[in-house]
Length: 276
Image 1 (spheres, rainbow, N blue to C red):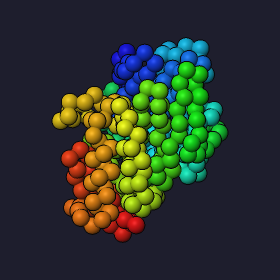
Image 2: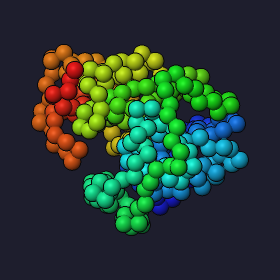
Image 3: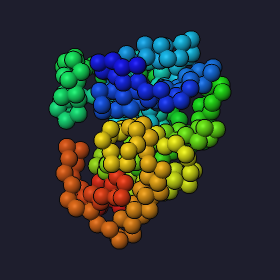
């Protein structure tokens, strides 16, 4: 199914990837009794309508992998949203005018206009109710259960969702095919991030689903799937930064300045004063 704003890809009988104007990937899982929407992106799509079309008659459970605005700005389309307990305070907050302008200019303006959308019409916002999730919580959809794994790193309250039955791991922004932001806003030490990566890698999930993808990536992977060794590479090479074996080159972004090490797959942008 293709639209001006969204490309929806059926990955499996019960799983879809929703590509929002080429900037975000959300996931919808039909669990038989309930459906799970992972992330709400920038909130440019009618997510309720998409979910109702793909999973008719299902109650929709919504979970944010973390509370960054490119993953939680569509929360106001739903009465209740879940997120990691340490990102919960941020999930309640509305985006202020300055941040709204920064996001428009740096993330969505060109893609939105190309899709026929006026970025000035963008109206993000929080859900009425935000419920925290903690490590080990289980989201029961009926035929499918997903376990919450707290993975502080990209944000202090980042979580991953693990579907052991199908060997699927939904990782948010913890690892991508390009450098991730380790510590350019409120987060934890890089050593903590590394422990989260090692824990994820130890699961040996066959299918690792990120929240962003590059259709032209050199690994030949679809945008909704990371190369098999990605988590192992991130865990190992982040450990080398923590141990002082690797030092990054200067890195500049609107989120903050730091250093960046390019990995065999992806990389890590981090604050050298917060290695831990």
